[in-house]
Image (tube, rainbow, N blue to C red; front, side):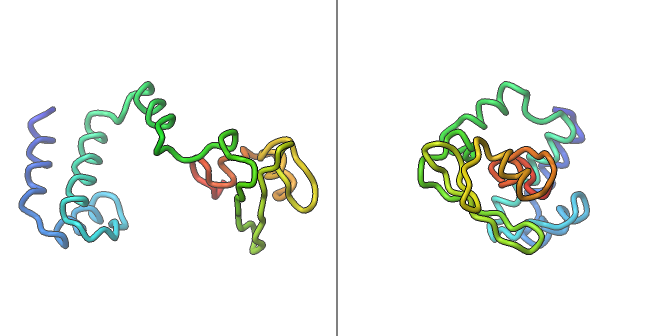
Length: 137
């Protein structure tokens, strides 16, 4: 780790919760609402280091996505699971059925097909429903 990054991270140790939040806002915008100074300090240190040295490598990110605590993927949703998404002011509920995904009384083969039916354009279904990545797309 470079000397300046080490110094930046060590400087965080001297800051209280409000100082950490101010540093976060200065660097990244809206600060987290966490009440634990230690959690904010660790998160800020991670961001500083990953920005300077690069984040996690592809293999590590893949392993984390596959870990038990990773966000659900559509192919791992059990029968009976319900997914909701508000789209243009309307709440849409999709149920996982044995033969696909049920929405609006019809069965679709994939979440992407449901997302297309809702939005009118081809979309990544798991992303659209917030199962991975940014659901606003």
